Image (tube, rainbow over all chains, first blue to last red; front, top):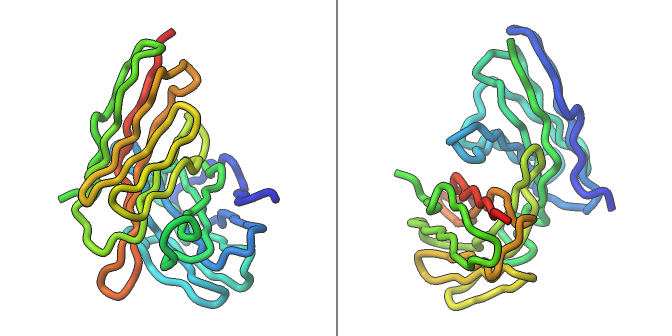
Length: 117
Length: 112
C-alpha cells in the first residue's frame, strides 16, 4: 500500500492564482481531511469528508473548497490564493473518526509546501 | 483557551538521558488520544493510540500512558535518531460531530 499520497510536494503561486492540491489514499478509508500547519499554530483542520459525496468545514475553511467524488481522492482547491495561505498542507485519512481506538487513527501524507507571493 | 497543551515546547537531552513529554487536555467525550512523530519536512508519523485511562503502549524506547486528563510519552535512553517533534492529538465528540485537535508539539533534540 502506498498509504496517503500528495501532489505536488512544493508549489509557488502568485496572489490571486488558483490551484488544486491532490490527495489520494489506497487504504479504503472513509474519512479524509485536510490540515494546514503553521509555525507556532499546530495542525488546524480545513475541511473533512466522511465519505464520497459528503464534505464539511473544519476550523479554518475560508478560501478553500473541497469535493469527494470517490473514496480514494480528496482534492483541496485554493480559489484565489493569498499570502496568508502560505503554509504546509497535510492530507490525512482514517476508517472513521467515530471509531474509538486504532480504527480512529488518522494517517498523514507527506505534505505540500505552498508559497504565495 | 487551548484544549490540548503539550509541554515542554522544546527539550534537549543527552544521549541516554531518559525523560517524559506531557500532553494535557480539557475536552470531554474522549474517543482517543494519539501520539505522532514528525521529522523536518515530513508528515506526522503515527506512533500510538490510547483510548482509556490506565492504558499503556510501548514501542522500542517509547512508552505512552494515559490518565483522565493527560498523557505522557516516556523516552528511555534516547538516541540521536529520536530527535523529532512529537505531536499529541485528541479525538473527542462534541456538538454532534467528532473533532481531532492537535497540540503544538514538543521538539526533542538528543545530543550525542
